[in-house]
Image (tube, rainbow, N blue to C red; front, side, top):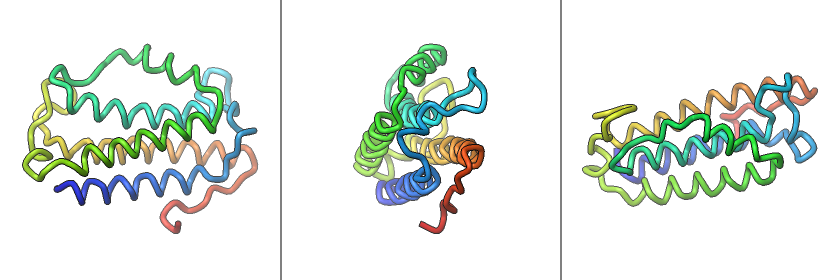
Length: 156
């Protein structure tokens, strides 16, 4: 994979997520099926945070930050869907910029010890795609619980 292919894959991930979540508006921010579950805003914020997490973990010598309780605490502070979407936009823009600037050789370099150790740097694109798809699915269910019909993500 080269930088162009990484950006292309991330653009698809972003398009699919944006399409699935466009049925939500700000008044849906606090919706969750049960009180202990992530809200709509939390899901979007967590998805953005995980893009950042993959990038940082892949690019830092010490690897991935595994303090998941701290990550969740940060996400739970986000109460606005607008704020969560802004975070998502920043995270995806950063991911595309950083990975798009990498050469094929840089993207083939092994990840540090820990999660995904030894896999090529480019494998975080697949990780981002898989994780984002998981939250697209959850948010599709949330949309239906709110009486909305989420758009087919692949149709644009």
